[in-house]
Amino acid sequence: MAGGRCGIVLDEGVLFRTNEKAFVQTKRKLLNDCNLYCIVSLPAGTFKAARGAVKANILFFSKGKPTEKIWYYDL
Picture 1 (cartoon, one colour):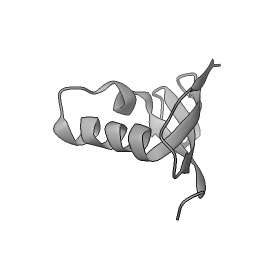
Picture 2: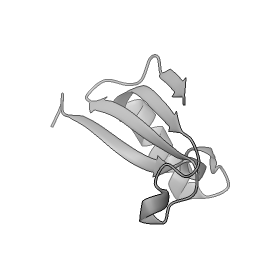
Picture 3: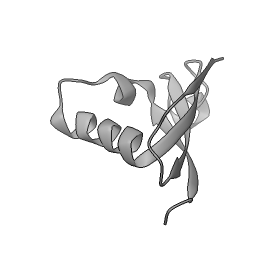
Picture 4: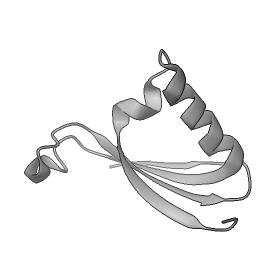
């Protein structure tokens, strides 16, 4: 649905994998078909209680327009 908004938590490695076609295609689709307007980088261990000791990112995006500008916050 155009105009729909979403926030998603991802392992930081997902954003930087360039050697796997699926990750590259997913990032390209996110940037071209959605407005990825904010990334919040969380410190390692934020999700330690859920057995997630790696760094994570929260991505906020809306569907319908391509990405023009991304705000990046490193906590």
